[in-house]
Image (cartoon, rainbow, N blue to C red; front, top):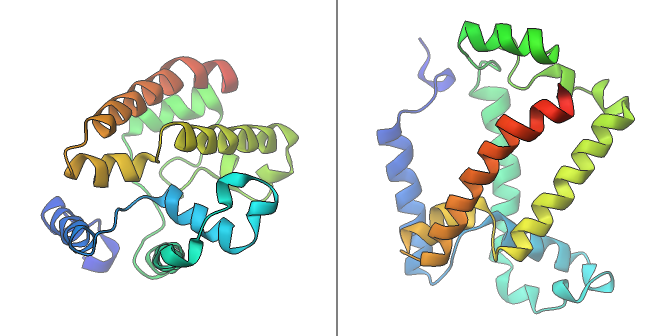
Length: 186
């Protein structure tokens, strides 16, 4: 068993996240991907499209390192530290195959029926991804932050709005999985 290819246990990942949050708190910064992506968009002159991006992004250019680090870290983890599969319950795999025609469950990290280059040729999949991206962007802007910002940084700072937002994320996720997803793909 190669430890690089196994998921890290909670007692390793948790303290590492805590260490990063402590360092950010000590530096007077907060973590959240939506603010990092806002900085990246502002750096690419997105203020021409929306006033939301019209601010002094250079004062927050450290956010660009987070975006770059997330991309590089994701590449390293997926290509060098992962066996590229996710073990799931065999009953779940059977249900995915029967109800949603997803037969690659347990064989790939992401189901190729949805996330392959061939699937991107389907206008329905493109519409779903585009609509999902718009809804996530709107939700992050309307909610004052994204899931990582509220769930990790906001909760660690004991912010009540972040607790309310995280509860909303979970309720929204349950509604999506149990009600909307079967209607869309069923």
